[in-house]
Image 1 (tube, rainbow, N blue to C red):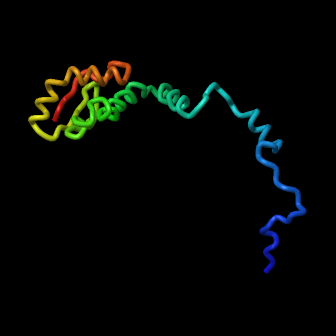
Image 2: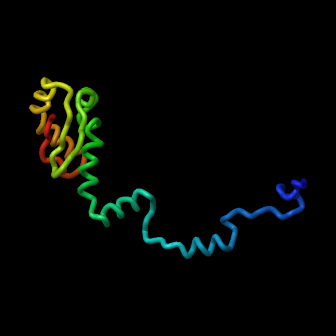
Amino acid sequence: MNDEWLFRKQEEEPIEPRSKLPEYRQWEKAAPRDGVSNLGTAAHRLIDALGLTERFREQQAVIRWPQVVGEKIARISEAMSIADGVLTVKVNSAAWRQELHYLKLSIIKSLNYDLRKEVVRDIKFV
């Protein structure tokens, strides 16, 4: 069995990099460039186009819960969901539930400040 065809011989001309191939250049020039500079920008435009901006912001409240409330409160609680501006938070004990109830307005203010928009109107501790 002859395996010479698997290996490029030294006397053959080397393969040019993709950027130097004329077909690649033609494709690169024809590719639509509508001002999207990166994937993050494209994702934000898609979310806006689908009308999901508010839902996305609400989910950010759930995701950002541990960072906003701090390590101590994050250990005893977990943001579960949000619907119509009401964040549902699971708390480990009744005593902590009562304590967080007293801190509710401060937590809402901190979450909305972090999200740069009034997303959370109320918190329900369960």
